[in-house]
Amino acid sequence: MADRTETSDKSQFFNSTGFTPELLERIKKVVPRLYELIEKGIVINHRDLGDIIDCVENGREIYIYTGRGPSNTSLHFGHYLPFYLTKTLQDILDAKVVVQITDDEKYLYSKGGKKPLSLNDYQNMAINNIKDIISFGFDPDRTFIFTNTSFIGSMYETDLKIKRYFTLNQIVHAFGIGMSENVGKASYPTLQMVPCVPKVFDGFIDGKAKCLIPCADDQDVYFRLARDILKKMKVSKPSMIFVNYVPSLQSVEDKMSSSIPSTAIFLNDSNKVISKKINSAFSGGRETVEEHRELGADCAVDVPINILKYFIDREEFTDLWNKYFTGEHLTGFIKKRTVRRLIEVRDEIRERRKDVTDEVMMRFMTLKK
Ligand code: TYM
Image (tube, rainbow, N blue to C red; front, side, top):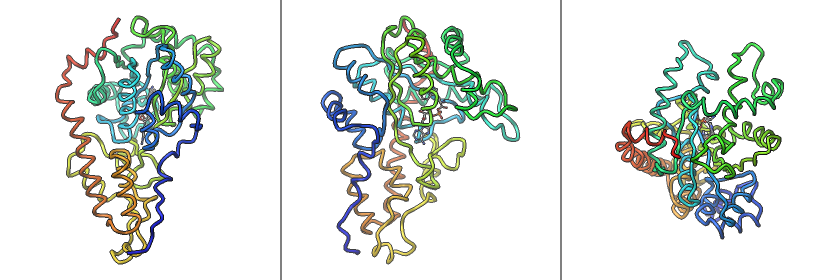
């Protein structure tokens, strides 16, 4: 085995760009479980998270807003992170959660393919996605899940007010919409900003509650714009907390995405499919065992270990990374561990999903007063 005692595991942690040492100290003191998620690399950035810590310290109400744009009947392991974070934050902050299911979004935005899907197809995917989301263990009394097509009546007034502040030019530039594209692409974005206004959930959420949005940074464009507009509307601007990207099966440089299903492992994939996908994922292992023992794995580009990272504890991860990096562990070992862990995570969701009847779903989809 190569004589390599150096490890690069430090680079795996605290790659969080926007956390100052002062803010990290506050988080560690006030919400230690959140601090652990930052350490683990699940949470990597934020906007105005300090405002939320202020609220926690001063006992001011906050609520959490997140969402999903159905494009498949199942969530994938990338979606797992923001919903896991949201559920964890609900527990530690004792907060209400609203989940927007944009069953209109991909209908307007998807490229269509040979046979474009109907609005009804997206609405059916929404039902399956909602059942997956409930299976993260959200509290039915403190969680409201809504689809845009069903809740539009309650959102319309606020949507109009937000729209009034935007020029077509701003929207077209921010979302890269071409002049020959459908007009829905330009009208949709404000709808994703609407749930940042607590008044929309009147009776369920206090009108002065502060909004916190967990998501990956692909959603930042909506909320950067919303933060500007809400200031003009004299509504307090939302804070954001960003998860890292679970990588695609092909490359750590790309994110796992349902628009390219071969890049993703879905929460409804079978054991066989999970195993097949992980076994064909891009590996940082060397060509031959001898070479691998000599040089060690290139962990930074290895997809399985960079997926596994989010689903095991830090101690195990550091140990696996170091032993893979020095050539002690072979690729097969890392892949096997990843398959086993992903199956366990999927089974936890699957087990809870058995109890998510239509009745349970309706309970989550009713705005509690
Ligand atoms: P959607 O359905 O594309 O993604 C749902 C959530 O998952 C995050 N995400 C990922 N996180 C980690 N690794 C990945 N590979 C990965 N891929 C996606 C997304 O950032 C998102 O948080 N327009 C939204 C729906 C939406 C929304 C919101 C999302 C409406 N309101 C408020 C977040 C917050 C969408 O299509 O998400």
